Image (cartoon, rainbow, N blue to C red; front, top):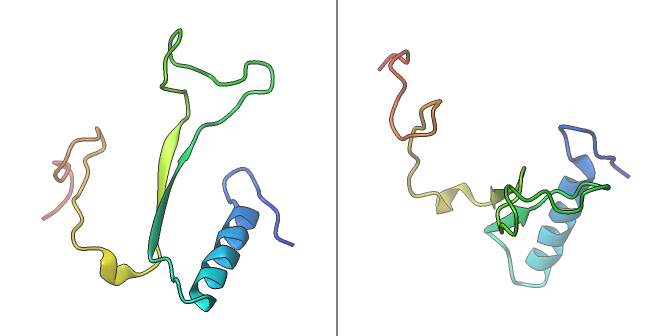
Length: 91
């Protein structure tokens, strides 16, 4: 059985691939999915960014596109998070 590491989630990947395989075999293939991840801290619970916030430190969305034909466009992102190419990049 695969095991997760700090930066590589091998077990998570194996479980999702197993689920995708089951869905495909049952005639309901999954071409993409998204999931929200909110990390917990053992001593603090949910690490909110400010009091009573619904925004959590370290929370993020992960996307998985299993069929590349479903990707209709991509946009370059600058290092500062805005759209477009960085000035240092060559055309």
